[in-house]
Image (cartoon, rainbow, N blue to C red; front, side, top):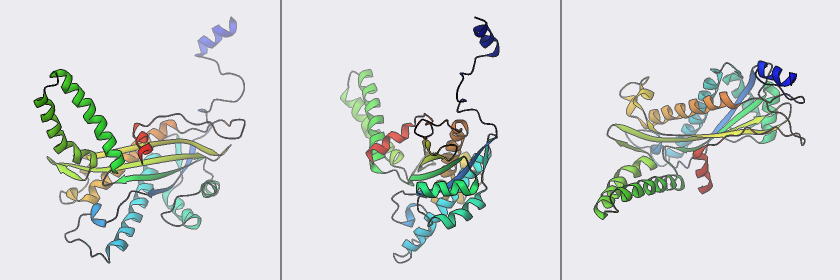
Length: 290
């Protein structure tokens, strides 16, 4: 009874044994690895505004350069956003880029051995890597699934409200087809709103005291809000690459915010694997259709 009373006054007791995974003696050291652009982009005009489209001979080279710049920008954005969290100490971007140059070819995802090497060279507790699933347009498996869920819910609601009046249901489907298709698919501009989808997936790999994946999350940004473009000139705000970069920055900020709340050193299981950080991302469900 005395122990129960004491626990109540102290706000709870810690179970004897290994310490809770959320307790760390010092800031968590994180290294941000490459963020790979795997979106199926075939032409530079899909992600960049040109006064005159590049020739078929030049376009593949130009597209490769753009992809590399996007990957570097994504890694830098994530590094900068994570560094704003007081409980996280991030390996500087330039240092990580220098080490990565000796570890893996540019644009290639890291193997687990390469992640371990990066972590050991930087003394990081956790390494974070990413994939850009969609950039400029959402893959049809993703947007068709999302649109079907959306249209089914609204059709049912309108049908019930109108006693399944054919004219009302038909009118809704007609309007929905002309507005929601470009919204779900992306790449359109409607009523001054730009729809430039960016979907990013992050993975976190713990490096000590035991090694293994501990956390993953996804972020999807479709519409580009005006305030996200405020730092650009009015002429730049209309360009595809600027709108996409703004949404990439927003996606990375969202993921960094979640990572700042979730990432902690995890206790080790009996088979020397770190305990997973539980979480749920609605957008990750659509990966089942890819």
